[in-house]
Structure formats: C-alpha cells, structure tokens
Image 1 (cartoon, rainbow, N blue to C red):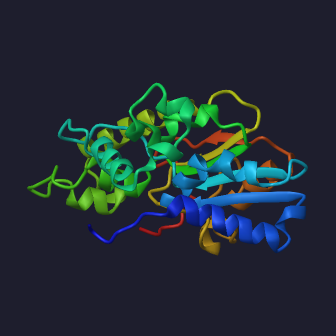
Image 2: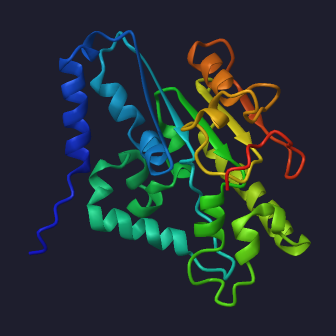
Length: 252
C-alpha cells in the first residue's frame, strides 16, 4: 500500500550477473569494497560475492569504515541497536543475512560485523579509524542524547575534547578494539586501525596514497591493502591511542 519496494539484494545480484556476462566470469582476481554503509555491506555480502565468481578466481573483500559496533550511547541507551533493528525490519533483510548468525541471534544484531565476521570464509580486510567520527556522532553521542550540547564541540573535532570527554572516547576506542576481536584468528584477515578522527579513508587520494597520507607502521593505507591483496603481508596493525599519531589528514 505504500508504493515502496526494497530490492537491494536483487539489484546487487543483477549487477554482478551483468558484470560476469561482460567478462568478469573469466576473472583471475576480484575485489569487493565499499565505505561506510558500503563497507558494512561489503562485510555482509563478502561470501555472497565470492559465490557468484568462478571457483578459479581469487576473491577478496576490503571494508572501509564499515565496522560499526554494538555500543551503548552516553545516556546508557541502545540507540544503534534499535536503529539497526529498524533497518533490518523495514528492508526485510533477515533472509539475506548470514544464517550462521540469524539462527542464534536477533536479525538486527547480525547487522553488526562483530557478530558475523568470524563466519566469513572469503579473505577480508578491515580499514577503520578507532575514533570513527560517524560512530562517535551517531553511536556514542547518538541523536537525542546530548540535549544541552555538552558534547557539541568535542563531537565536531576530537581536538576540542576536554579531558573527561576524551577519556570517554578512549574507552570507546578500547570497546571498538574488543569488538574487532570478532574477526577471529584467521590468517586470511587483515586490518588497518589508525587513530584518526575520520570516516572513510579510501575515497580520496590524500588519505589513500598521497605524500602526506596517514601511515601505520610506516605504511599508507594503499600499501597495506596492496600487500595484503598480493599476499605479501597479512598486515594486522592497530595504532597507538590519540593523540600519538601525527600523520592523520585533517578531514573533519
């Protein structure tokens, strides 16, 4: 009765089938990637993508800023958990989420990478800021949780955070790293977790592979991903806490 139809899963499959027909069916290497919502979708559909490619193809996925965590907001509420549950319910996503998760958890919880990543069979690389500013602004200091604007300056720029709020952000970083353990010990997993206050780092040259791009263990994001793609280096590195990293590109 609404005239609204959600067909993302069908569109994804149709696009891949079209690409396969145009020559991707003979691919030796195939990469699925995306940032933010696209980064989350890359994780959730990584195995689905691999299943559509020839068995002879070397398939890998890398997710940029898509490792959203299940975390309480500053009021103690579960804003992001309810938000993800609403998305899954509205779009009827349960049937397209990993059965290994939905068989044991509510479908909304299976939108969180920490609950599904360990079951993914296809090689996966995670690029994320430990202080991802989308997550700070929408998960930690969620809409409606700061009516007096106490966090306004801090959530706009980590450089403005007073000691007490910075301490909360440091706690959020530790909780993010704990959630990252959901990747499991697989040797096909890699990650690049820096301490920049940013969201999406692969879309512009300044962050991805520029003369002043962020560096972690003296590698740019592009170098780390490239080494992982070519099986030169697994690359599983986590930055020291803010403000020790002086290589971050200041894109607020």
